[in-house]
Length: 107
Image (cartoon, rainbow, N blue to C red; front, side, top):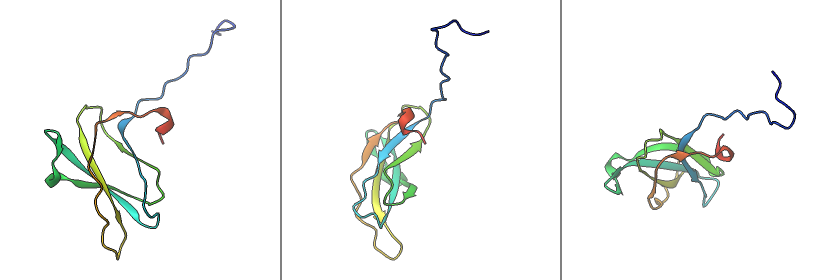
């Protein structure tokens, strides 16, 4: 059945995606960027449990860590890496928890 004139068709809503969006700013685009994630330990990162979750190209602008919408904080840091070179210094830890990724940030 057709809708009457002037009544808009309902928009199909895409399924929600949750996670953490991290803006990647490279000091030198030749180097890759290694991103580490650590679980939260009473407000601070559990550094002994930190794991590399991604290595992205230096020209990457956004990286997404797709996670469940569980309200749990995680901590992230990054550093420059390139085979044959010493790893760059670590950034400061960033604390974040998953949120719904807006349509413009979805891949």
